[in-house]
Image 1 (cartoon, rainbow, N blue to C red):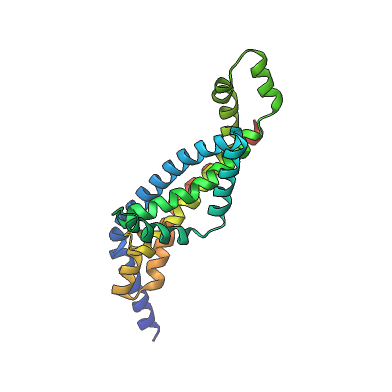
Image 2: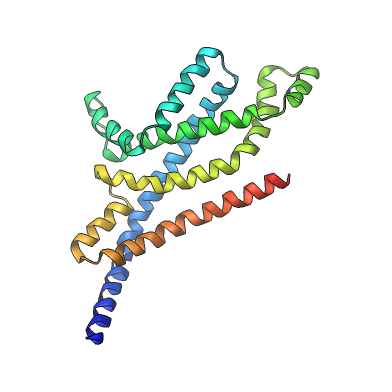
Length: 225
């Protein structure tokens, strides 16, 4: 009996190893989607964060509503809205694009809030010093507020990037072929659910752990500074 159990375990582990190449190909798609999500959400979120910190009352109010609504909605709901809503708007976007757009909109709200808080955390005396030497508003923003603010924002932004990588797994719900979707395909063929998802867990860990280490390093460095 023990021999049979050991043989079955070895067979299941062999299944995980044999399908590792397939899972790694899907992991590349996950990384591509994560990279697109991080880059575009950071660009959009940074711009929105600057307007939220320095814009007029109307602009700040509109952006505050956007941030509160998006942050209060599950990301999966936004993916469904993008997946079913874009075709109704006449946009024939692939499911990969629809899911990425939803992720960008979702994480841009978090980035905007981080950037807004970081810019407002820059001491007013520093801003006043820039004005006293004749710097204009644009120069103060580019030379003082953004550099100092982004130093404060960098650690939480890196943490947000790690969360964005893991959130790409939601895209499998709308048929995007990435790591989670590929793992479900393998499980359906092999019925080795524990072994396959354990391998998937290790792949996600190898992707996200270095990002977490980077966030910890940045937090310690800038705290010391």
